[in-house]
Image (cartoon, rainbow, N blue to C red; front, side, top):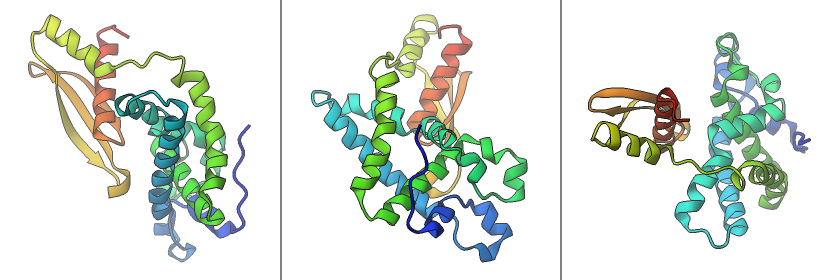
Length: 222
């Protein structure tokens, strides 16, 4: 079972667990984890890309991109955070606590990213971070990426829309929230001005995929 990485600088670990809502209520507590989250996101994207590049030497970029998303999207990073029990360790303000912040996938995934950013600074070594995260990537690759079919929800819904309505789906970003480096987008999918699904994601394309998946589920096609 994966455990928290061992830190030489415990202050870095504490900062990675500190949400901005906590700093708003405790301004003397130091810095929140948003800058570490930014760094951790970059480190995870690099290491997941490197992992897949080496694992699938024959696959083109277009095939590797959705696989990388499966390793480091919000849902998966939240699962990593839950496995590490980060929810109970996060320093949250009372409002975030009351609103279920310890179970919020967005906060959990962001905290995991901050943890990775902090560990990179603490070790000053990409090798150390690679050694820590590759077993996580490997476990996901072994249990899902290699064996589960990669469903293209948007293509499947487009095929249904053309066959039954005679029009292509249209995807609309209806909302976005969060800081610039950790946006969450909400998309809806429409066909002939009828809304079929809505979804969220940290990237616009992820939100659109989620909306297409919801549409397929509502139609009983998944």
